[in-house]
Length: 318
Ligand code: MEV
Image 1 (cartoon, rainbow, N blue to C red):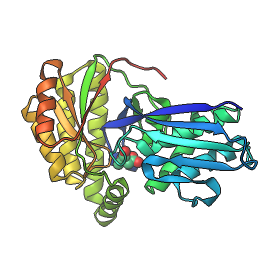
Image 2 (image 1 turned 135 degrees about the vertical axis):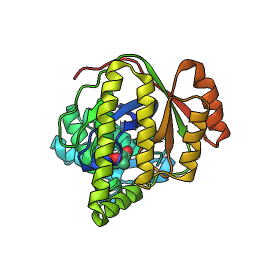
Image 3 (image 1 turned 180 degrees about the vertical axis):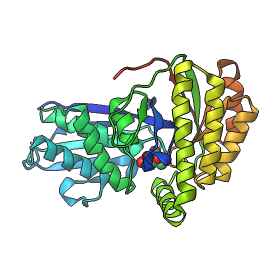
Image 4 (image 1 turned 60 degrees about the horizontal axis):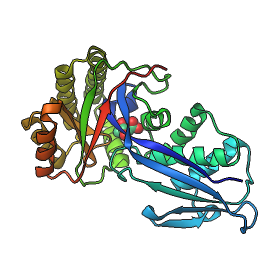
């Protein structure tokens, strides 16, 4: 059996995080500059069906059988083997690595799952369809944070911009003109399980207030879809700022993230907001080419640890 390798991109959410968990639309795009990678290598000297999992970035080097049920890497391997109907594959060694910032709100968990499922299914000679890969990655997402919407695994699996509503087929997103975002890493972890849990507790305590906020965020995502189709960058920037204000009201921003968005706007970004679960992780700033360099400098001066560029250049049709 041959070595197989699969990779999957990171992602950013342009509009609609958190509200998407409650059925509102959201928009996300893949970030191919960062990738998770899984490599499966036959282990001919090993006892049959022994599977070793190695991911040095998280200090993991163990036999699959020894890993707990809620270990996300092990869960992805096990779920893939169940879906493939191959409970006892030839022995193999799985190596997982990633350039996607860990706990950065950039979908690293989903990308690792997708890469693992693809590499394992290719290894046993039965590549799974995208829908199956997406479903398995969604199940593993539940281990990362209990009530995922499914947007992370979807954008990462299909590796294309998505207009996403929980439980519905992915919709086409039209993009009229190229757009450029700077993704600034705050250096703080984004505790997605914590923020998703806090928003849920807030919603349970005051459903009226939270549902109003979710609906307002959902409206922004719908308007953003129109603005993307029209190529209206000024409107997109305004919508991003409005989304950030609502995320602040959901209490998922932080002083660090607010300082980054303020710096980006002062340097000429068309809009800026946190992306993903919030409190830490990344801020995204929409920039026109003439302003890109000064916005980058301003983000770094305000404490951004790294900056990744991402561009949305072409429409994709389902
Ligand atoms: C995390 O990338 C996005 C959240 O909306 C959670 C989810 O949709 O599962 C915060």
